[in-house]
Image (cartoon, rainbow over all chains, first blue to last red; front, side, top):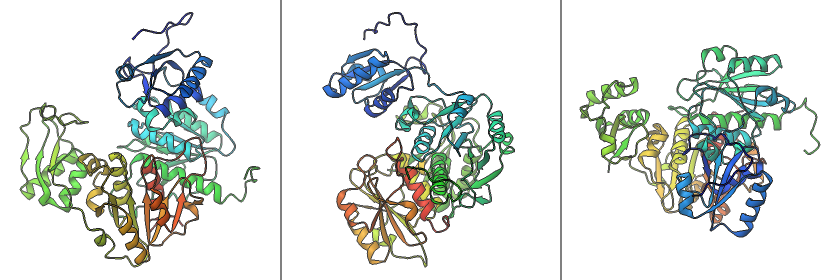
Amino acid sequence: MVEPSRRNEPRRRLMSSHNRCWIWGRNVVLETLRAGRWPIVDLMIGSRVAVLLRNEVVRLADRNSVPVIEGTDQELTKACRSEEHQGFAARMAPYPCLKLPEFLRQLPATPAITLLDRLQDSFNLGAIIRSASSLGIDGLIIGEQEQSEINSQVARSSAGAVNHLPIARTSSLTSAIHEFRDRGFQIVAASEKATMSIFEADLRKPTVIVIGNEGRGIHADLLALCDVSVSIPMSGHVGSLNAAVAAGILFYEMRRQRSTQAPSRTRHKSE
Amino acid sequence: MPLLLKNPNSVHAALLTRPEDVLELRLAPGKTSPKWSEIAELSRGRGIPIRTNLAPADNRRSGQKTERTGGSIALVNERPDRLVDELFAELPETSGLWLALEQLQDPHNVGAIFRTAAFFGVRGIVLTRDRSAPLSATVYDVASGGLEYVPFAIVPSLTRAMTLATERNIRVIGTSEHASKALGAVPQNQMTLLIFGNEEHGLKRTTEEKCDELVRLVPQGAIESLNVSVAAGVCMSRLAANGSK
């Protein structure tokens, strides 16, 4: 494969190692290109891709100064190391997480935020981002320690939602929580051990929902800063919920409460 | 063919519910996690063979694709499926929830749904046979024990299950992105058969037509819909016996 020329352009940093900086698949690549949030280093398109779609890709790529390389299916497979590319593969720069101040500036009124404490599984992180985006969560905060990066797998399991949900990364989750507390947010811990059910909690106020590590739950230092702990009531006899499923149930309940019982809020024009 | 299970939670559940089907334990060399130690203890009491003299590369040589290379594993027989009639034979006095999965193809989704179903006390799951993820070791491991607690039937089509449900006054609710009714508008605490369709194409049209009602979860948003295992979790939490008010 011939390297595309990058005149007058410094060499860009990649998301991950040379081999792991690719995203692939028609939907994820198109979504990423259209959203224009996550910088693409260069893009490969399969020679079998239909002309109309190819023209759109080239136009979008041009607008963002992304070099486009045409290749055979085999060449794409070799580059992204997957046969499931459907003729689309892109080499990515690191994901542009927001800084907390930027994140805070763009929040709507009465925000619903989720903060993840050391989520290690990329499948779970991607699924949580997808659910958050679909269920109207206003943004997500992650830390730096023991935290899955926003990588290729996350992009895929989020079904492209990484391009839409505001995501901030902070070196200190505790100071982030302090910041939200100072701004009048209630901090809600999701914990299997909590006695209060999510259905009893009032999630209509400005809220940060804290979701903990898959195995160990929420760190004690963070838990101490939470106003209330809630759990999803078990109605079977055994088991536990996967972190992504639990997050989806929490987000849905938050949204349900906000859309069905909001007596104090003024009605939005479009409703 | 026995399954090679890697998740200690799925092995533990099998040991508790059907120890006769746990054929052998292979403990990885080195330090054993507390969960696997507990499993070894239980197995010893049951006279299940335990192998500990495994070379670290054992998994690699057997050609098994493993996430935790060289981790402990157990050989467990598949859990037998039931007849669809059996799933609906004993009706609960008040509310109860059943699921039907039509051509779900991702074993992670099927496993995750079983795990959530056990948590919410689902009475049974009906799965289609064709173009569906088989109940492989991955499904058992992702279910984290859920497959041992929720009875299931494997069927050529969902027609009979839907007819049986209707005959027994169990309402049949399909999930569809195109439905106009929201999940939140469905009355709770009733006997319900909930149906989920293929990850990409959703429910077959013929299946949709036979549902008493179709519901959707998400009114709008940049991303078309939720992952099916998350969607199923949301529906179960809403419609399970002790769900929200």
